[in-house]
Length: 101
Length: 332
Length: 171
Image 1 (cartoon, rainbow over the protein chains, first blue to last red):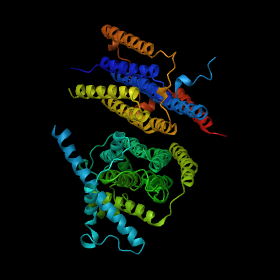
Image 2: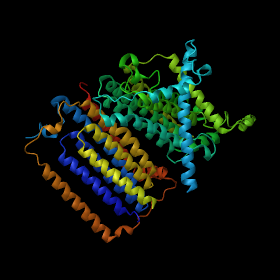
Image 3: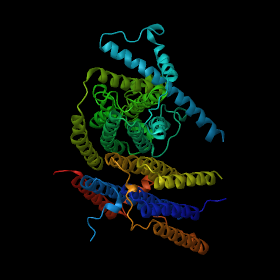
Image 4: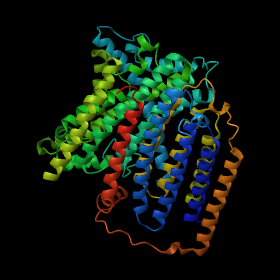
């Protein structure tokens, strides 16, 4: 059986959904961040698979940008988590309500 | 099938066994050289001049009791030595030991980058060993070690960028070929990069004077305090395998790999009769000897000094080196 | 045939490890599963002939970003698990339902576009004067995508400054 881009798209969709479940269900904000990384990876798989399908490297270029953005997001996000943890001694997202009206 | 599966497998088996045997003899060499530096004899009991000590040590490690602390995280405790050993062995796939395809497992087009990225996985073994032991000193040592490895990894990677710019390729084999074509070892063109990679390599392999993660006096042994038997042996194997990798990287990138000295001087063509792999191994031996010599000579840095050297000295010099290399490359 | 075996093995590994990331009780186990997931994704990139991206994936994700996560998990040394505090207003079942709906939607899109099979259109390959995955990618990044590339570098600089400002106790 031949592996088509549709196979990769299904894999990517499943991975993305696992990420979404993680974001919506877990309460540890670090795990939520990791679930976001999973979703970004799902998108990357899709981009690379279709870049290979159309024999064009533009998809791979976008993956480079996604990885750069993921690195920036991880650095700032984890900085925020550390700063928050120092003040409130928690990483539970339900208790992070200081900005809530 | 024979060419794509069988022969690479044979090469891998031979290579891994060669690495393990050289590691056992590295420990003997290290003890002998340090003993010599300190006017001692070193191990002398097992075999003539203590040569069989190289086999006595692994046998001792393998037959010792393998203890898992009661409060340790069992799965991670088992996984950590594996995670530190596997990357150290995987990178040997891209190191060319000679001029013929017989002497390397694979020549991939992103070889150097592969090497950098796979060695960066090794930090997990150390940090997880410290965490899974569920013990204060190993945790401190694990955090220190990973901070050190990450800091120096940046410096080394930035330095390697300038080497890549000079050679114009990422493939390990083509880097050596580029040195043959220009007739100059990159070590002469990029002396600053050479020194940086040497210092960074010492720090990446946790060698003296940067052996902070296993500072016995401060941390009762380091991240592997709670390990015993062959699991400790795996960390040991990984550390020395990493030393061999660093020596091979230094030789391939800066000392012309398997090329003879002065590859452009025709008068020395007689040296070409010596097989290429002998040049490679003798150069690697020199680098390893240098590492041991440094350990016997220099005192250990303090942790804050180590971090300051990494971030405030090595990284700026590495970045400046990349900029200068790029400008020179464009101007020439 | 070989590609089929590799694809299914890697898919099972990726999805299984991703489920482990989301469900593991201990955050450190999650991080380790995440590293494994990223390594498997890198292997998938090699199958897709994107060697440079595979290596960058290992270098940046597995060797950089996830180490950062591991550091934060260890620094945030929790006396009690964050899962113990239950917000009564929290709607976890609703969240699961939303995720399921999203999976259905994505599946619908995939099936629809696959039946249309419009993907036979081949985009014209950019004429690059160089050969090899890394070289072509570099060519694209420094010609057609130069401005996004520079912007990404500015973004990384801003993120670096921001992370230092956030994490430092007193400047």
